[in-house]
Length: 125
Ligand code: FES
Image 1: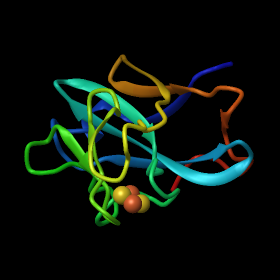
Image 2: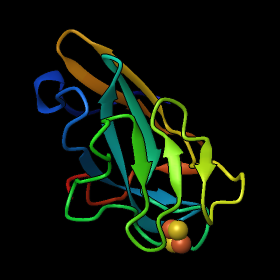
Image 3: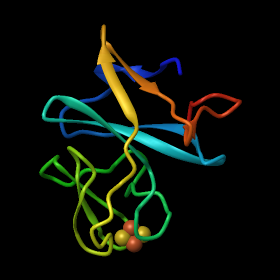
Image 4: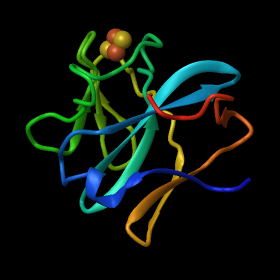
């Protein structure tokens, strides 16, 4: 499948605010987000593995003060922001769903999959 440009590289600062965008997950409308951690872009479905709700505390705020841990706003499950693995709390060992992401030429690109696809009216959130 062809790549979709999500945002500019400059939209993501190390350990900073995440960039949200819209996706279809198994045909259901939801969102995903990209964050920069260890100077690499990481991208996940915006859906806690405990209860399928969005993770951010405020719009785009996913990371704790360390800039390396994603903490769910609802019950505090914590995930390693480099790979989405559950670190503790109600996620009970279940990771976040990762999206295929690539940074090149100053921009960030997502490759949709069979499971995670582009909404008919675009990805802008
Ligand atoms: S919904 Fe995320 S910890 Fe419960």
